[in-house]
Length: 205
Image 1: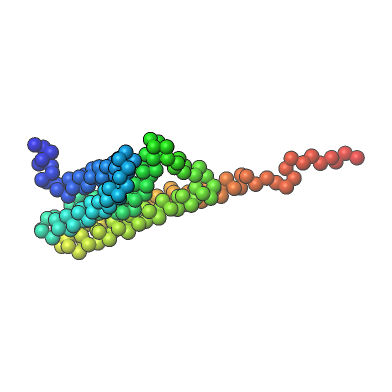
Image 2: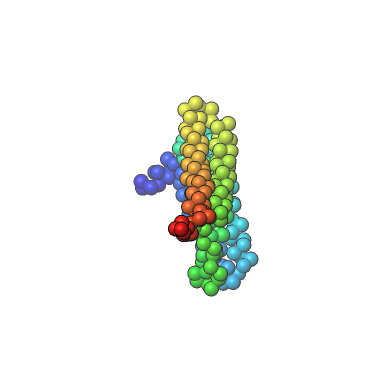
């Protein structure tokens, strides 16, 4: 009963959880259809359902405010979740698909994350660009919700979530690509060997 009451009090948060569960259910079903039953077309159809989950959550979140509900932390959470799924949803599907194919069905081994060097720098930049995309989508959704919410307190809640998203983006930027650029530069300096290193000069006469 307590769970039912919580769902009634926080329908948007409950929908976010349901969407996350649905994401993994559709992904698992698509993998099974592709590799176990060899139904590639069915697998593609199941994967195409993933974006529909995001559309359902977006429509439900906006509709909830349009019907007069107060903007709460659940609406901010929904906005950030939508941003994450847009930025990392396809990436996650690709990673899971490649790992399952390699681990259970003799597929090629997925490329490993570079451990250093220029390849690692490029990898970190690509990841951060996904974070940037997630931030853009989340802030855009929050912007729409801000246009609907007319109470200053509710606007403050939504702006707080925009601030959290910006903070995550900034921390990832510093801890990811920026850190790796400096780390790669430091490794490059350590690898440089002086021209006279290892040479013994005979100064005896």
